[in-house]
Length: 530
Image (cartoon, rainbow, N blue to C red; front, top):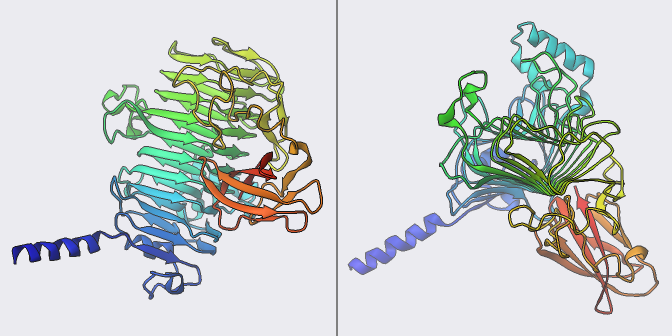
């Protein structure tokens, strides 16, 4: 009898621990159960309010919009072995948008959360500089019309924050998202820990805010534990044209607008203005910034300010500092920062890097070009990196390396000083040493392929349609698509008549197309799905 009762209890416990999938659609109904696409909830918040550890919330095609508060405020937490996940349903293209009196489109104050594959769109297109400046002037003069000010300061994704609801979230993953055109910051993490921001495209943010935002930022992380290894990761992101045009209300001048910033971890959030160091709350963990492409931002491509224990490795920065004149990669008042294997291509006459204020800010194996070099480290060189095609338009720009690039096969190969995979998942090193910058050239794998120059994929970037341009008629080609972490996502046969590749099931992100003819590798191309 006791054994039967135990089996009954274990059976019911296993049922209670099973993960649940919820579905949400702008055309759904919150009075339904949300357990299928045919009974989807209407709002993401409805699903968020019932999730338990291990659950997944699938967003369906359509726009989830709020003008009064966040579209999604995540407060419930997963567990170390069962994260709560929010993601696009395969084949769907959900969008999240917020403006009006909404300060954030998405806020995350729960822990053990994954948020992936979703596009977030701000309201920049409907804001003028004159209106934003007037709002700033009113606030700077002591105004308190916060609901009106929000429209010029709406952020995309805010993890934690300086408000009363902050719960010091930890173990948050933001990946494969597209975050753009928010008047406030793109993706920010404030008073959080164990934050991973990877494989995102973040652009046109921070234009109209009065709080000096950036594309991607980590500010005053807290110590969930006291370990000293890597706890924060910013990797494989593309950040462009994030900038500030409105003064920072605290300083009454323009500031920041960086592509990526690691900001103030030498003390806690409430100690920022103090002259007495807050050693108790100094952050103990390391932050890894790797394989990012950061171009045409108003501030630095990558910036560290009063932030210790940061490794900036294998990044590409081009044409940054367009508003405030910061260097391409800028380490400012930091300790224990390693800047290794990067490419810094400055605006003409601008600064590639900065002169360190501490001997523990280390530069090595970097390439500088077209600007002032304030610090030359070990094995640093000044030379044209020879990108495939220079442009601040991502549809045209190609920051992979030509075969004659001085970045090719010349990076540091010391363990821990180079990224093990590049921005699109190519393993490093392909040759005797890693390449410098975000891209690793495939040795004898692309340039020498027989149809590399006679084939292409278009449009690029793209949304739901991708075509393969082929050199011959009636020939069959086998196509494989691999994601940025090296997973095979689909296979398909194409010819000159049926040359469209079905990418609708893919989430937003960077992908590699490998083409085979008669079983032999013929060409390799890469594309961005938005």
